[in-house]
Amino acid sequence: MACRKVDLDPAELLRQSIELFRAEFQEKGVALTVDIPQGSHLRLSADPERLHQLFANLLDNSLKYTESGGNLVVRLDGSGRGSITVDFQDSAPGVPEKELGRLFERLYRLEASRSRTTGGAGLGLAICKGIVEAHGGTIEALASPLGGVWIRVIIPTKEG
Image (tube, rainbow, N blue to C red; front, side, top):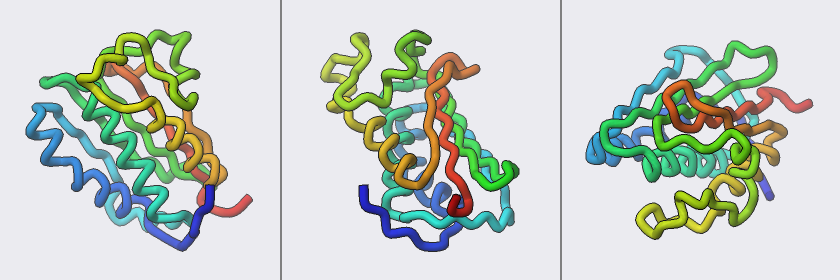
């Protein structure tokens, strides 16, 4: 995956991505909690279009699978040495633990999500994995304390 890396503020890019979805979360009745440090002065060498695509895919996924009355918590942590961590924790119906690692496979869809009501082709999380890896980072799926899925993205802040 080709990336056009520039120096950017990941906190600001994440805020902008969230704002594009905020009305949809409100309309659906999903509580959106955002924890992005103000004035953190984080810098990252990254492709802004690809990073926005990553954030948009993860927000869209949570919006798609979280029911009305549910929650999504988005948290950015820049306190790690040499990396940023972005967490997306939702209360969507959980994914069996043995299936979590498969979520990033191309065309993989959990049996319960195969209905046309949620749509999708099973490519979104595979694309996310490609974007993160193109930036030298990692992405993983865990069980969320909110009952759904916790997607954790770690991207290095400097070239290794």
